[in-house]
Length: 188
Picture (tube, rainbow, N blue to C red):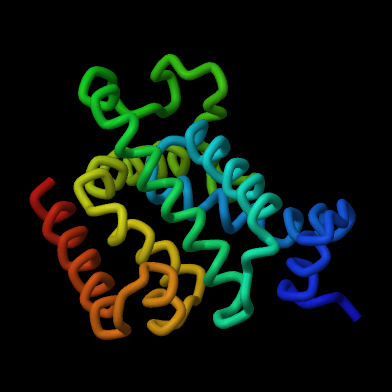
């Protein structure tokens, strides 16, 4: 039987490298997707999600078990994303969003949803993403985090714990984010 995240966190606090490796394997993809949805930049998302795992390793002993491990960890990640945006806000005004062909050599570009998709599907996907990225940039970091967390299947309670707000406020963030995206995409 696989150990729970909470048990792995206790082992990480005792500096168990195998427990840390298993925790990274479990949460790496979701952490990256959440960071990418908030930051809108793949390179920054990689950096910030890696920083979150470093923070996890350093702070595992402070996890008190009052909430689920995932709630605690994703709150760390969201905070790091918000801090990253605050630090880099001036830079974003000078350069466009990173993306395929935007001068970021680490950016792999956008792959089609299916390995068998043709050029038409790829063009449609790129067009959709090119419309969605600017719309997502206009949402608050909390709204962007809520959208991905909703996509990942988090409950209102879990979202409220990650964002440190009431469940009602979390539901308002979800509603406003969806309404704002609809409005932005319709005006396009």
